Length: 288
Image (cartoon, rainbow, N blue to C red; front, top):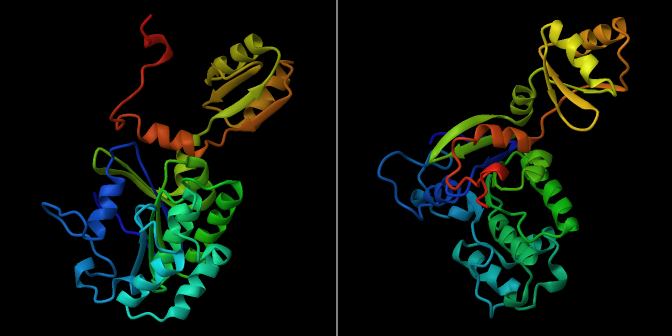
């Protein structure tokens, strides 16, 4: 599995369960060993970094904290281990919105609050590289909106940001680039817009009450037509303007012709179709 996370953009890291996302992050941080290959941060292995929090900040498990410590004390000992001043702790607490809860015991935090605390820890050394494993987990709607803008601001500051997530809607709204993995290998490594365009292809959604007539006209013109819902058919092989012309010439009534734009979820499902470790049975395969 080879890929590079570049500065100035958010790179989404997605794949089915068991694809190797969390393991890859653990390898990068020297927590898991590899039989071959290298994982480098700014050209060096993690264990060669004297003060690693100045180079890379990470959040792999939001529950990896002492429940009896306050959030501030949790961050203070991390800062002390890296030679960072106490004022930096207060800065990151404010940055993630935990100032009012900083002196509460972290064991009483909700999952969303623990996520924020973990992100504060990742920011302590003001590193140029940020790596977060499923940071949207446990976030309420306000937290999700905050997280989207926060991740984009980190990239806008010139940082390299790697974010794993199983929530495609959040990745689509946040990431500039996508690394899709499956069965321990990289399946795709490209810009989000490029992947969406590739999967969207030349498909057009046509809304019409005369589906049979429209299908005959468009099929005779070389298009491939398939039902896509009530009074809607999906057309491929012809551009939208040509479809409009053909339907108008044949007096086929229609109310909408729109180029299909695939969602990131569609992109993900198409790319990982052969890489799902535990595929569910389709409705027709369910035993009776």
